[in-house]
Image 1 (cartoon, rainbow, N blue to C red):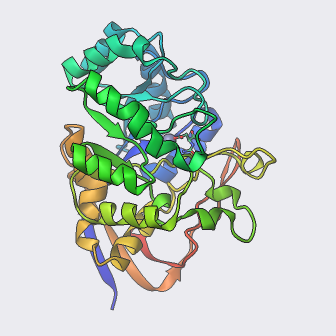
Image 2 (cartoon, helix red, strand yellow):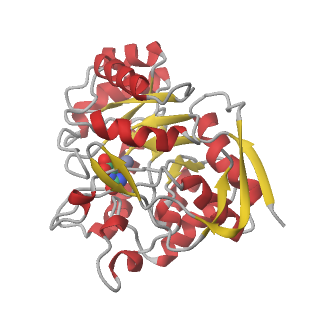
Length: 345
Ligand code: NCD
Ligand code: ZN
């Protein structure tokens, strides 16, 4: 029997769209299913000021497929030079929905990130005052800390003191990858985004039987027990957890490389993958909360009124292996199992 579910159109609360030819190539992959997305500011150079965000917003709108109603929700990249007044103006403009904190050196294009948190205290105070959320890339960059421990150590060394210093600041723990992240979000009543790929991958998928560059992302996939904790959180319906795909396109030449870039490109097939995951976990009734309700509620946005229908087919559905952009080919995330769900056109 064919199964259908209808949900409010989803929002992607953590997305990398890049710029130029790459933006043009990958944007339709998101706008096909998603109504809105929180757009990451880690361009080169980064989106730091309101003026930068306005210009990037205009470039995204110019790249939209015809008749698309997609709404990019802009973010500013926090630097030690960020001006609190500019951040306040950005929030007041309605265009900018959050500020993104990258510890310097944590991930792709994070060189301009924060080294000394004292230098951003005034900005964070202003954000707390006006209710503008801070999105956190939660990994320490201390070379002494093992890469698989960097999220848990960030919680202890950075997040807990940051919350003590700025108690009113609204924060999003982005792309959590550990049971520690899940437990902390719950115990402290914080919100957290979870990616599609971290619901599927553990570190064996990345490393056993040969290194899989298209499964390499940051934060890196962890042990199986962590994947299971993420999966339980995502499918629980708990309003503190919502989708941020972290879909992060890099051309194949830079993924399949001696020093490959971090990022999984999941925009194309995220919704079919999630339907299948939630079905497998007996949680299809919670899919809409995870993809379409919880994130919007946190950001103070009305839920989308438009809907999408997902259908389960007996036959496995095919999706492109790659998206061919003018910047080069981008490999679409392969979940490693046949996909039976499809979003109706
Ligand atoms: C992201 C990118 O490529 O911009 N990469 C990733 O592995 N997720 C940066 C990020 O969000 O860490
Ligand atoms: Zn990201």
